Image 1 (cartoon, helix red, strand yellow):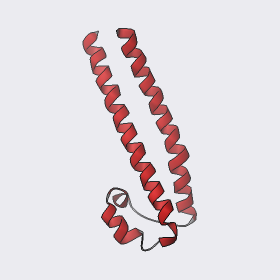
Image 2: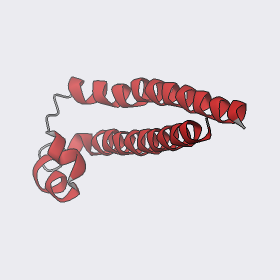
Image 3: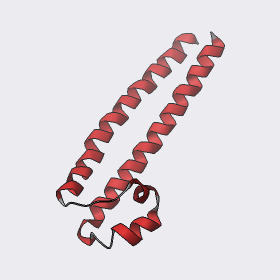
Image 4: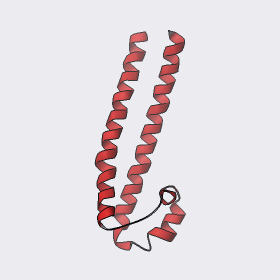
Length: 99
């Protein structure tokens, strides 16, 4: 049981590494396109769809797809990282209790 739990935790850390690689590849690629087009918005626009549609998208209608892709990649990365951190913490807690 101990070996299984350690293996699961190691696997989850490897998964976190792949989330980091995903972040660098997909999100930074989308970010690069937005920088080239000089699109500017704040973090509040990433997490508030209404403000994004009212303040940012009308200013940059030619980059609408790139902005939405960037925000979708950010949300997906945050969700995956949150799930992995919760799993690592849970299995770590079980491992501490089991030991």
